[in-house]
Amino acid sequence: MDLWNLLLQIFKDSSLIESKIHTRHTIPVPHDKPEYRSAFISFTLLMSVIERSGIQIKRIKLDRKHSDLKLLFTDIQFFLITISNIQKMMLRLKKILYNNKDYALWYKKFINKIEILDSFRDNLEHIDERLDGVGKNRKPLLQPNMLGTLLNNDEYNFGGEKFNLSDAFITIKMLKNDLVEWNKNNYKFPLYF
View 1: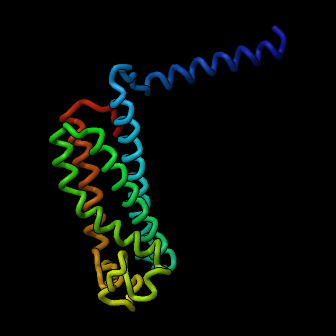
View 2 (view 1 turned 120 degrees about the vertical axis):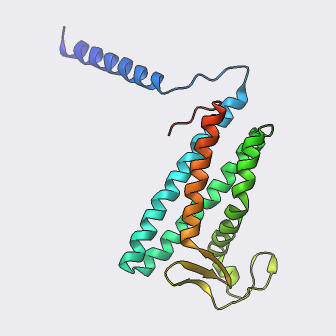
View 3 (view 1 turned 90 degrees about the vertical axis):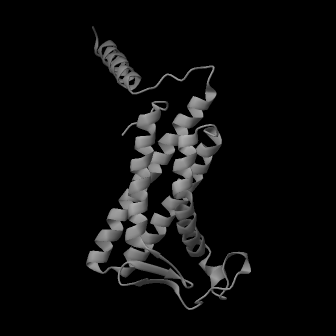
């Protein structure tokens, strides 16, 4: 066998091996149930963004130890962006799983906390619009001079509205743990944990 044919055979064999590996990790989606495909993709995206929030949590904890305020506030903003993405995927799944009462209970348990955190993301994203002392929908800020302050290394304040970083971290951990538990009880959607 010449070198070219040998390389082709190696490539062909490796692609067969690769496809077998992927086959073991692929969930067959019934053709008559397209909602499974949407649910699978949505769950995968939700878990991905939850994992990204975990990365940001680790970075924030490290930034607080090193007193690097520039990195700390940047990482807080990126953490809040992951929260916004979690909120979007939760809502998407709520629409897909509209008949699942357990998912509705899980959603209801966490959505208010997630929406509050997302409002901080909105303020940071539109900080130029907050410089005049007004928030979203032209609502006056309670403390217009507070445009992102960290009190006691844990209490984030924007415009007089506050959230506790440690509480937010616990919320994300509980959200993930409860989602995994929900899936174990339902045995319906192909989630990898």
